[in-house]
Image (cartoon, rainbow, N blue to C red; front, side, top):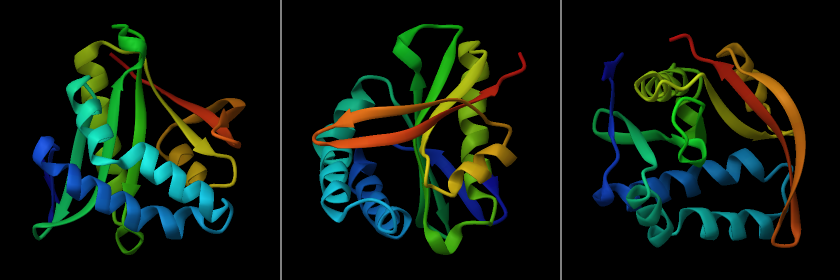
Length: 170
């Protein structure tokens, strides 16, 4: 898909280094104001090691990358939740470079997840967002709403998230 000078295409095994670099570039400005730096380092290594990304691709996670003039500017990852058809497609990751935010890239990436949800006959998209993350307001503008607040233990830290959902019309 091409949108206003941005090309969105499927991420493949050869793209894991690009995905990892985008994540590192996005995470520090996104989370350093409200997460401990040690937690950011730990999560980046556990979630974005190339080996982990390859395992996710092999397990059916879908990655879509956004490029502006051949430069990667963002990505999304999604999958069928628990592998069950007809229920929920879960957005696992959605990151857009800070300088590219507000230009429709996140919205276009979510549209790719919606297409996949239609293909899977899912009834909703789901994601987690940290309760301190202002991206919550972006997700609300995209039609997501909070279904619950959760506290998830994570290697000595607590992920204090909102679970958000967006209904999918079939």
